[in-house]
Image (cartoon, rainbow, N blue to C red):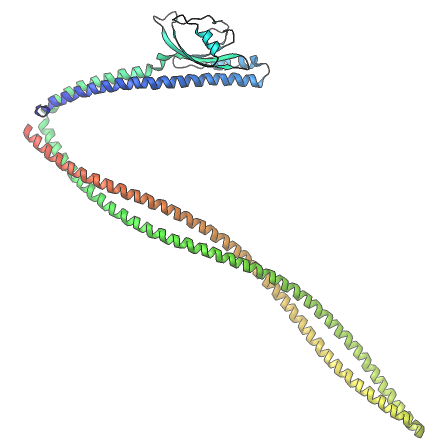
Length: 459
C-alpha cells in the first residue's frame, strides 16, 4: 500500500508520523524529566538546608554565645535564592522566625496551609526531614505546592529550613517542551512545502542522487581495500611487536643474570679489599721487624768490632809476652808456649770476628734490601687496596645501574605488552571496520540499483 504512494505523499505521511512520534516522545520525556527534576530539587533543597545548618552550628561551636555570630550570617543566608522565589529561613522552638527575607521576628507557629494543616507545628515536632504542603499567597489565584527541607540545630534549639515552590523547578522544562512542539510543527510545515518542491525537482535530484550513489559505491570500494591493507599491516605490526617483546624478555633475563654476577663481583671485591688491608697491616709489622733486625745487626757489628779490637790487643800482648819469654831464656819457655797459644787464639779470634763482620755486613745489607722490598710491598699493597676499593665502588655503581636498567627494561616490557594488547584490539577493530566496509560496499551497490530503478519509474 505504502509503496504505491507518490514520493511527495510518502514524505507527507512520514512527516505526520514523525510529528506524532515527536509529540509522544516529548510528552513521555517531559514526565520522566519532571520526576528527575523533582528528585534534583529535593536534593538541592536538602543541600541548601544542610548548608544553613552547618553555618549556624559552626557559629554556635566557635562561640559560647552563638547569637551575635549567627546574626552576622543573616545577610549571607538572605541572599540565597532557590529556583525563582525560594529562600532559607530559621525558626526557634516557639515558631518565631529568626532569619527570613521579609518576616523576621514574626511568630508563625499557628500558620496553616491551604488545606488547614498546621505545617509549622509539624516541622517543629519532626525537627528533621521534609514536608510538602499547598500554599496560597494573597495575590495568588490558587494554591501551589511548596516543599521544604529542615534540620534541627541542637546548639541553639533552632530549625534551619529551605523551601520553594515545586512548579518553579519545572519552568525551564515547560519552556523547552513548548519550544520542541513549536519546532516540530514548523518542521512538519516545512516538510510539506519541501515535498512539493522536491516533487517538482525530482528528476534533477534523481540524476544527482545517482551520481552520488556512484561516488559512494566507488568510495566504499576504496575504503574496503584500504581497510584490508590496514588489517594486513596491523597483523605485521603485531608480529613485529611479538618479536620485540621476546627480545626484550631475553634482555631482561640477561640483565638480571648480569646483575647477579656484578653482585658476586662486588662481594669478592669487598673480600679483596679486606685481604689487601690485612696485607698492608702485616707488611707494616714486617717492616717494623726488619727495622728491629737491622738495629740488632748493627749492635752485633759493634760488639764484633769490640771483640776484634780485644783480639788485636791480645795478639800484641801475646807477641810482647813471647819476646819477653825469649829474653828470659829457660825460665821463660813455659810462658813463651802459653804466649804463642794466646797469640794463636787471638789471631783465630780476629779471623772469626772478620768472618762475623762480613756475615753481619752481608746480613745487614740483606736486611736493608728486605726493608726496601717490604717498603715497596707496603706501597704496592696500599695502591692495590686503593684500586680494589675503587673497583668495589665501581662494582656497586655498576650493580645499581644494572638494577635500574633491569627495572627500565621491565617497564619497557610492560609497555610493549600494553602496545601489543592495543595492537591486537586495533587488529580486531580493523577487521570489524573491513567487514563493515564490505557491508557498506554491498549496501551501496544495492542502493544504486534501487535508486536507479525507482527514478526510472518516476521519469
